Image (cartoon, rainbow, N blue to C red; front, side, top):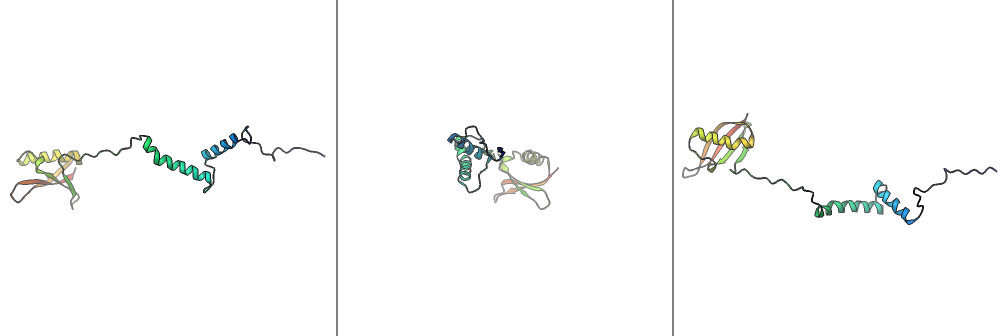
Length: 145
């Protein structure tokens, strides 16, 4: 009889440690790293739990520097609304304007609006007055250049 050993039919251990407990630990760790466990198994649930713990607990201990940027409103407190002709209407408080002359008012309005909207041209503006005739704000119709 010819007795040859078929080495392919025998399984060789993946680690030289063999079947010891240390070998089982390394196989488990390798399974976690390679994500080789079936969904719904105990080890799969452990991996998902560890990921969720990292996502929800790590911000308490790790500073990711992901605070929202503080938005500082414009110091004049102006209000912008679209008009029906494709332009914009700015309402600027009268306290932001320091003169009563028409040309200077237009220049100051442009000076306030351009840092917000970029290059614009004023098509018209009007003073909004209260019941006593004091100017409360200016409505400014602008078109982008």
